[in-house]
Length: 179
Image 1 (tube, rainbow, N blue to C red):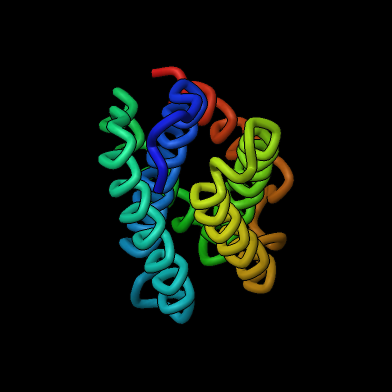
Image 2 (cartoon, rainbow, N blue to C red):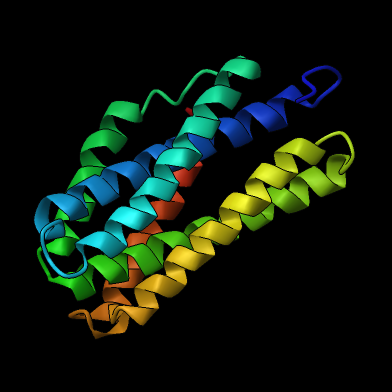
C-alpha cells in the first residue's frame, strides 16, 4: 500500500476511527458470546465475530504501515463495547441481533462516507484502501442482514433500542476520529 504523497490527515482519521470501530465490534461480539455463546444463535454470532477479528487484524496492520496512533478512547470502547454486547444479549437473541443491525447499519453508512471521501481525493492513489473499506462494508451489510434474518425486529422496543445504539455509534465515530 502506498504511503507516500497521501493526505495524511484524511488517512489517519479514517484508519483511527475504523480501527476503533472494529475493536468495538469485537468487544460487542465478545459480550454477546459471553451471554449467548452456548445458545442456538452462538454459531451465528461466532461467524460474524470471526469476520470482525479479520477486520481488526487488517486495521492493526494498516495502523503500523501508515504510522497512525490509535484513539485514546480504546480502554473506554473496551468496556462499553462488551457491556453493549452483553447487555443487549441479556434481552435474548433478538436483542443481540437488534444491536448487530443497529451497529452494522451505522458502520456501513460510515464506510460509504469514507469511500466517497477517498474517491473525491484520488481513487487511484487510494485504490488499495478503498478495496479494504468496500470489502469490510459489504461484510458489515451481511451482518446487518443476518441480524434481520434472526429476528432483530422482534427485540423489545426495537425502534428505540436501534435509535439509541445508533446515536451511540455516531458519538463513538465522532470522538474516535478526533481523539
